[in-house]
Length: 279
Image (tube, rainbow, N blue to C red; front, side, top):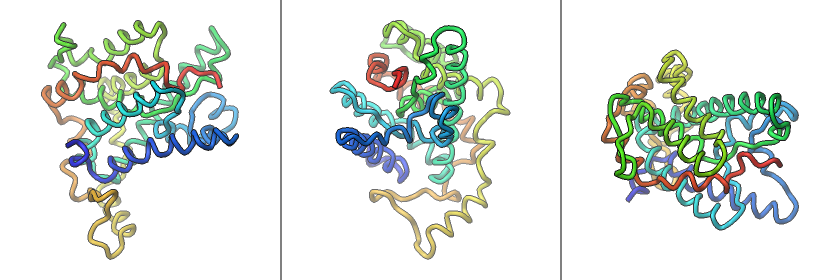
């Protein structure tokens, strides 16, 4: 089972992500709008100086309809498919920091795009929000695809798409199906391509060194032998399967293609997300 293969932080995200969405939906029902503390937009970052939303917007799910709940289940499934491998490579602490940095990188590209759209076309995009775990999933998928750029992945058995261009093909196709550009997905893919074509931009370079992470974990855990979340052990920096540098270049076509073939219904989910909603 996928749950049994999930390390500590992945389990915490998979369990906490829907719980937070449900809690915020209940608060919204009684007139408390706590969601503004997570959703990232030009209004929240530039107008209200909520800079933390750059890092945390991906960990909040906005419930709007029954379809939103179905897509939440798919998000949880894809998190259990894609996150464990990366957490084992980096260690749980470094993996958590990496997710925050990845989310911020996606949001910086997203907000830059919104600035251009506001200036050239429609000022309402000043309020367009980016929230939800899809952006992180798409960014991770892109980095995994580009780990084997010479390989290819089957698209529903119809055609073999080169891994190097599969993420862009994916976003363009489902933007077409949705009748609008999916700016959050484009931003996520942009982060992956930026790290591929400009290795100096690789987010792994911003992570603390292994000794520093190990010292931090030792202080946090104290005399305990190990820390756990939902019965899964926290992967220490010294127990990670590979360094940050090695993790950014590891992987093959089998690990990439097999993890992304089934969930091709992503494109139908975008209307249930808060991105592009002027609130």
